[in-house]
Image (cartoon, rainbow, N blue to C red):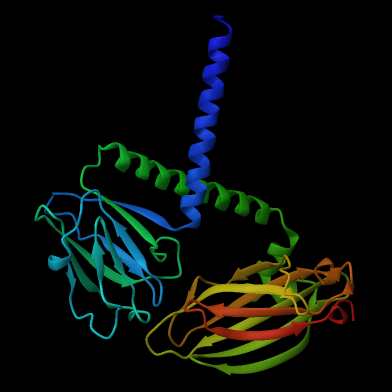
Length: 311
């Protein structure tokens, strides 16, 4: 019997950790965040990141007072505020301006007032849109501690995945080539210019160059982007490489000269893909490469064919 106890304990702990980890993954997918309220006067007002036509739900430990819960200057810009039981729901009709902040004052049934500041969600993980925010007054309560643990596990997983991605990229020939191209070192790569187009998009002028190599079965695309916006820096949300026929994603390497391009400045974005990206069980595929800026607007779209390689 003595030998069985540690085994049972280990199995119980393993099951508990598995359950917690699964809950953390589900929480990450649903964009749930924890806010712990503070009584200290120096602490800033909690910020909620919202996006047009996306509902953000606040969940409290105690009921709210709908009659005394309100936003300032929301008319025509938000759906009517929903407040009842232990929840408050806000939904902008469209994205807020980059520098905007809308005050929200939630009054609980016991008369306590909790202020928040609604700001536009950004393109990074740190200020991604909030779908649900769990608000706790007592950080030492069970629910508050559990919710904080879920947030910590989500952050740890994100760091682990980022570190793994960086390790893989460090040993990738495609990422090394993309880095050289983004830095403007075309002569130090085996690529040569095949085709080029100049695009005039909203807020940006873009030179698109398709590159190929006679020695490597790879294709590269170099975007040289001039930010024509007088106020905002240009940021990229994502690049997509997929088959034209079925929209199936393909692997590629991407590097940017810098994280953002200042107003009036020029920056390069390089994409490198292997010959295998064109292969499928049905034969050769055409690939669509699309570039999106931070607000989701498509800035460039082109179709790649395998004939660009070794031709």
